[in-house]
Image (cartoon, rainbow, N blue to C red; front, side, top):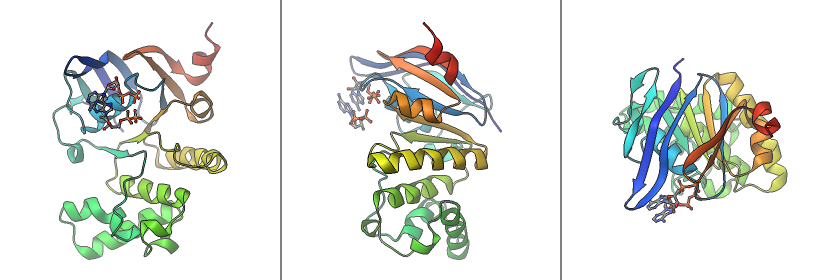
Length: 225
Ligand code: ADP
Ligand code: ADP
């Protein structure tokens, strides 16, 4: 599995410098949290890794290969969004299979791959429902299945638990962690919650003012003076 490396990564929006030259090496298979206050550049960093936002300067390397200018679907990354962004008129199964349809995969293969992913997140019995017929936690599982169907090496999660009630949030932490261990792929999880990062992460990258303020194994980051 490939390591992920950020090399002097910069994001500018006009005059605003949202990400100011950050460098970091994520070992393959790590669960990393990107932690910091609102506006510090976490989402911009994640979106540059995913390819949903262009890189102003620097590079994103996956397995040593510069993927900075590849389209999102060709990077080996997948992203799960804050609001899950499920298509309201498509069944859960069709939502999950959506990217395969875009790739031109045939219907039989789409259905079996989607079912496999839904099984993984314990959602197979709800495959024929519409998103509006799901609870928040179920929508989140569907969104996870949809992101994972492309078999990414790196899963990017932007505040994945923020829409859930506190009880479910704690439960889903454990599920995310379990899923990451099972798959053995890299998870990069953006959060502004220190307790969330502490509970989940192997390593934590603390951002502030568009830069990395502190980073390392979870224990060392919070034990520092
Ligand atoms: P965070 O995820 O940590 O809240 P963001 O990456 O969303 O931070 O934002 C970092 C900075 O960049 C903020 O000042 C924000 O207002 C600005 N920003 C983010 N996206 C855009 C955009 N599309 N256009 C202009 N400014 C943006
Ligand atoms: P988050 O809470 O995840 O940091 P925001 O709610 O700040 O994200 O931003 C949501 C969307 O609005 C993003 O697509 C981001 O690019 C855009 N955005 C954020 N800040 C600005 C800004 N100052 N100007 C224009 N677009 C922005």
